[in-house]
Image (spheres, rainbow, N blue to C red):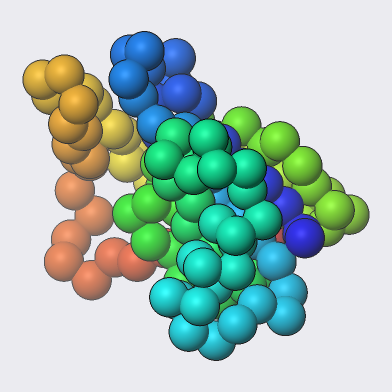
Length: 135
């Protein structure tokens, strides 16, 4: 296990009593198949937790291979529950937050559970964010 990060409504503080717990699990030596990963991880949980948790399982190399919209959300409001990466995970998320601020990319709530990303000043069509740029 490399890291566990709480994200979503529980991390933002806008959860309802019925909200699930969204967790990103970063680990090495996971099964290649996403289905087998989920089965492996959920089998480790007590029965009463299985329907309350939504766990995304990625290897660190997969997670840091590209910046996804989910990575942007986790950078903004993820809560690191466990980090055995010698600070790599927390540093990269902090660097990504800083990059978002520098680029002027902001997230705004629309409605109760929806979010919209917008630019303070649109940089043009060929923009991208990479993990390497944040380090």
